[in-house]
Length: 181
Image 1 (tube, rainbow, N blue to C red):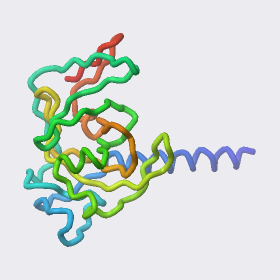
Image 2: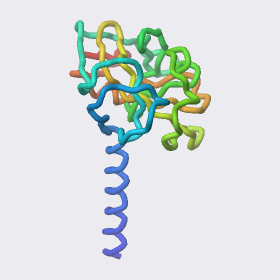
Image 3: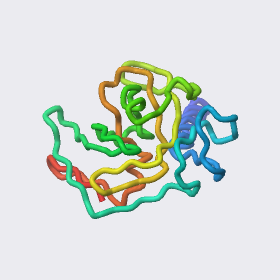
Image 4: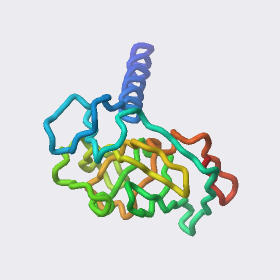
């Protein structure tokens, strides 16, 4: 009995470490390359555009308040690499998750990105393709070099996940208002 319990705890710990590794995976410090360029050991994240090769940075102009929508979720209008995209705030998502439609609107050639694994969604497991976005900005709170996944599923809306939210000073919910700082 004790042996089974220890194996169960070890299994849960291994899965947690694996999931955390995906959430905090770092990219290498070489200059960004287009996804179709020669493969490199980048942890599976495809670079976009000509952004800085340093790690993520945040610039802020204060705070943003989001009201709760009728479906009980919070939504933000995000400027992703220069394109306005409506996103649902999902603190349970490890990374920003773009629908194929939104990724293509941003200028990502989705079909040129390799399938980098499976994403677990409410509708089951679906293929995902990893990319690093140059910038995600919500009303002046900008995070640069944001890890994202293009999900080949009909999610309906892109998700604003932890690869953006975790870079902020604070994310608070009081009643029907979410405040980003």
